Image (cartoon, rainbow, N blue to C red):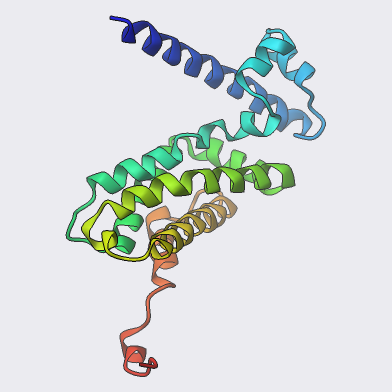
Length: 205
């Protein structure tokens, strides 16, 4: 019986964070990320500064709130992937789940990505989040038969490359105003790591 109240509190906390992030993002878009203070954000949200800081420790985390679940989304999608696929194919499919999760409102995500792109502090924090997700994704990948017997460095490199593909693809998609097809962009990004069949015979032994 004790688990239910904890779950309720977590749902409530997430809802409050989502609303604070929404209000804050509107303020960032109107005024500019660097110009807005926590005092401004708390005033816009109608809460005290200390209350706002209880939910978000930095302005960067307010903007990047939407990306928080992405690592878990990718890892969970790996569990659902076909065991007969190789690691690269499973990572490609897992990223499909990630972009589906992120692109619930095209214009909103385009705006968020634009703000990130023009704000060095947001770019740096997003890189940190990407590094935080990687161990969990690598662990899931190594649980599969195709990865279990290989060196850990291989899984780490594959996951790092896949995450880099994700951000490059999202950047190009955002630059197009959300007009390009994300699935096609992901396919093109992953294909960049494939050796054309005509060249495989020329590869050194």
